[in-house]
Image (cartoon, rainbow, N blue to C red; front, side, top):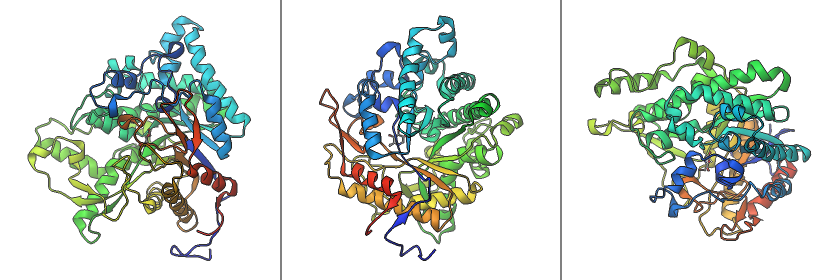
Length: 492
Ligand code: NOJ
């Protein structure tokens, strides 16, 4: 290769067959929250309760209207020329109370048919247009009935999730070959079950995230095994889990304490899930010993981080067919000695302050996103080195604009372009086995507690207009060119 990391050619052509996609999630785009017998999920309940937990108490009752406007979404997908479309199934649209028992009792109940028809149409239309569906079984929208029984905090969810997964594999797996069981388990565990900022909105400091994470990993692994033993031979697809991860640098690269702090944060953010699933069925040693020591100090009879049984470890180890990662931002880690009163929190367990570098641009719309395109390259290299050079799919990456958002989003496109350059370097210089890149998101949509104030779409939506028109941002037109050229053509 005739270039170094500081100088590279004007034309960056990606490997043949590289996938260029975009992503959405059911609750964030579909609307139709109670249409055709869909059961309520935790976000329906949470947003309907109000209480200023979501920007202007907005809900996604209507959102982008994708439940009725799928044809409009398809036009966007075709205009971009996407090779892959990543979307999620609404669990309670398919199974109103979350259980397959409900469906079975009712026989071929019409509620079930409506949900199935909607997703069948999407999948069939995508395939008819040469677009590969990447289907997420669960993206934060747990059926309310299951949450009422303890949700991800209880082990019982493992069986229920497996039944739902089998139902989906059986119903759609003749055509869907790329499956994600659970989207961003770390965000879910932290924001929903530890901090209580996401639905169901109940904080459980110090224990909630670990309990939820433990059951999520078990549920994922069980579903993967169901696919492996019952469906793989006939359907020949692949199943994984989509892990969110920031990239973390030591604040002071020469400080051993900061280097260790950076490692602890990576262990908590990514390795907590990736190590059991991709390496050995068990949590990172550094986390186990840290949390055990702190728990002891706090008077807990055992570590707040639960342990897997030997049988569970065997089941979890190796339960993924590719590495799906979602990247948005980078932080600097500074070692921080916790005081006793600070300790009851998963975020404090790692004894680290997380800081942005003052030179990094901050996305005003989602204040946690500092734009650091080179972080994605470092993260990919870390995954390659730590997880035995797996096939990697980036199933989300994006930059939000505030509201109102200009259609000429030149600055945002510049971030995308820099990111794509970093991906190119990761593939060609670092030899990372990256095969798919998906932009979050196809459409402006409901950004959880930020409501519609943070716009991640390649297509703008005027949420005040009842027809919810999709209009391309400049980034959409530029991304279409990248896809057409399978890379960047022309001067950088
Ligand atoms: C990750 C989540 O999966 C998605 O739902 C969210 O909208 C984006 N990040 C942006 O925050």
